[in-house]
Length: 172
Image (cartoon, rainbow, N blue to C red; front, side):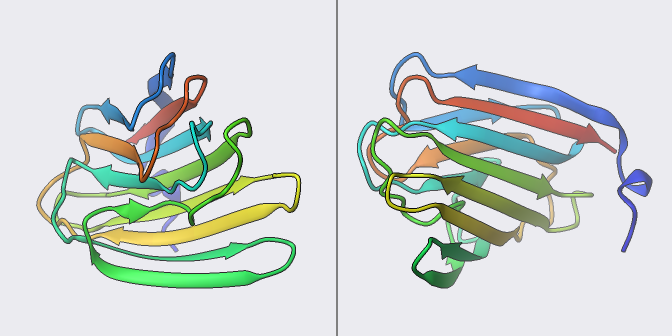
């Protein structure tokens, strides 16, 4: 395994921070291509139930993503995978009520323009009935561009006011 110190330099920098003051179907962060790894953290409120948080890199809506996830609660464990997707699902559909926070954290690594991107993410929340955890691994098969944009998309309904998102970046 290559140590991160040989790939990245310095401390993480805050690239962007947003707290929603109104509902939004998506949240966008633009940044310079000097960052080879970014981390997105979100504390999400929903304006209704049953949403999935989705990720798109560089506004690439081609079928260039593949992912596998495992989700678990106190009763079941389930998994799914998909390839040829137009975005990455960072978590399974959650049914957390609109007043509860859902947390996601995604680390996206793209060491060079000619390499593919790798995404590892976790998500979880604690509704009254059970604790739920999502673990995801994904790839972005673009081999010509560095990362310059991250979009977080709510699959249905919206991210509610009060949701917050922070993006950190590490330089090469």
